[in-house]
Length: 103
Image (cartoon, rainbow, N blue to C red; front, side):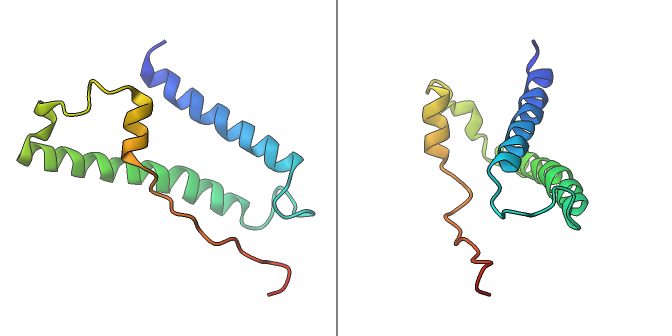
């Protein structure tokens, strides 16, 4: 299966899995699934933010690489994918949990 088909399928399957897990083990018990902010979260965060950030990142990566040419050195291309991911690190830092009970 081509990667262009496989990646979106993995993302959709992961989203469905996380949705099912959230319904089974809710972060906020008693919260309606179709709460007031549901469509806002789905459309803006899931689709717009993710898609636009990927486009912006791709633009900057291409622009920087065309100026510097570091990709021709293939510094990490021989590394296993798992090691590349570990070397990249996580963008999301540990965020403090919201304490909604005693606000």
